[in-house]
Length: 474
Image 1 (tube, rainbow, N blue to C red):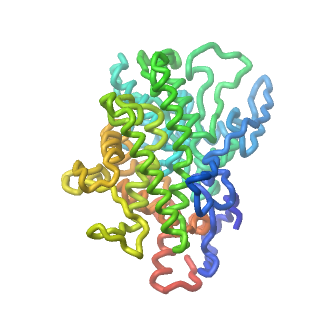
Image 2: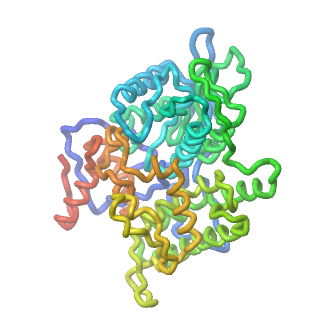
Image 3: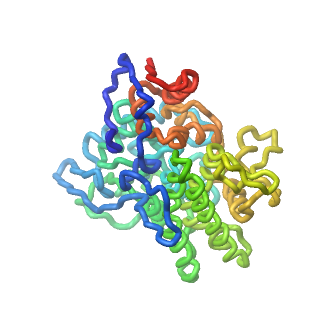
């Protein structure tokens, strides 16, 4: 089955017949990135072939008229304008979110006509998390510094895309595809209000950007800067601070950009290790992943003299946001599916993971968080600096109040997964990756899953009970 096949017949009365002799399908990264058809099983330390974790191509054709703006977007577009179909679909989604939103962890989404900035993302995607965290940091700055007494004002709106379900079942994915994008994250912004500055009358009001999460995170930082101005009906008197080192610290600015570039290959190591099914390759892949973690561990010590736990010392920057999603999944997902294999300093022949980052299980009052926050006991951590860094990150309000908490109502209403707590949620999402059955899972999801019901999980349970063979899912 081709990795790019994402449209499926939505006939729930049909059975999906799975033959276990051919259900392992090689796929790529979390958001079906435009990588080569198969990740390299081994990434040689001597010659690490840099794979593009996110394909970026500036290719779009735009046709403007006096009344409406339409865009003919290719799947590789990173910039475009909303067509009338996309505009109507977005308005419908935003109205439904506004009417149904009862989340206590987030303010109600702004109406489509008032939204200056809308994020299309998936709350389980490490790439989309980069833009999400950047926006949440800016929202936190807004709440802390704004002279507006309404602290519930939300800086941006969100549309979740459950791309596992496909565009037929999921409106967010349908909107994403209508914009010409095949992956999250993407942003839709009101060109007449967002970012300030003079706009040409010939430019359309709503435009979209997508494909590169690192560039989009930086775009968020540049948009919501000290010069940001919103529309006249919803003014923010906010002194936004940058997520980049100041221009008077060019060395640290260089270092931030260096770390982002250096760790852009984290995804390759992560997915190669997680998805590997070949026991003959497992040990070498695991060693290379461990060496990669050691590089991050070492880099976190470089600027420790600047009295801070971050990659740039005491400066929290886009570099920390860049790697957070994959560090979180390393601590939660990798340590779940790749069992620890060392006892009394002796290695186990049946396990490839010879390191651990322990988590705090002593705090029983905070259900769900006790297995995510890293423990203070450095003796139980093979990567002490990563542990300290991660604990600092999850204490930031943007992450503590939105990312690692129980899933919000919007996620429960849209996502096809069942777990509610963050740790169990990520483990459930990545089960198909750990089994190297991503395309199989997408086929099953598109056919049978629905919000809160994971048909692939049912398939796996039936598969284990029967010991393999052909399985039908009603």
